[in-house]
Image 1 (cartoon, helix red, strand yellow):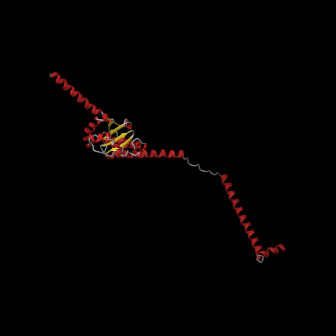
Image 2 (cartoon, helix red, strand yellow):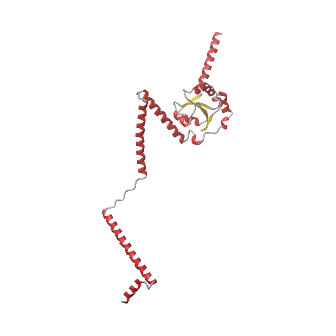
Image 3 (cartoon, one colour):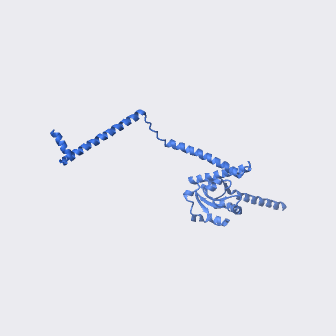
Length: 264
């Protein structure tokens, strides 16, 4: 009798342990490497941070909800924004915890109550259909959000370098900022040089026109000839105009003089 009771107790403990482990394994941890898995099938994903009090309060509820994931036909995941800062930028996470419903690459932010029943009804009753999906230009799998994600990862890297300089090397805060300022100036100068070289390569400058001495003399002589031609033309025009005036007014002195000359 005692052996049977002990056996039943052991079986009960094993089953409870199995269910507990099963519930924990149902939460899929997502990061920079496997986040694209949520682009397939239906997901509920929580963005959290270990230091966030609200996230800690939601943890047990999220595990209970994840235990029903297989029955509901969905996958339940979590993203640690401290370990994957690029994903927080990609999804534009501004508050914690943030929950997204994902179905075949469409993202909708969940803003309902944070209890197991509300999560389950949101999925089973398809209440997510009443929520507008994230627009394309803010979609996490778009090109522009990939660029934002890169900047977030860069900022996290710079923060880690700043912390390392102060803690490991004992630099003061102003010393770390000074190093970053010098590095920024150097990188800016290098980028400016690269841009100038690219612009010169794409739009090369025009070659200056070099005028030799002979060409200059020819040009000056041409200019002098041009001036003389202009003067001759002006004189011819003046004579023609005088002749026309004399014809129109034969009593003028110039006409008399010209007539007398012809008579002579």
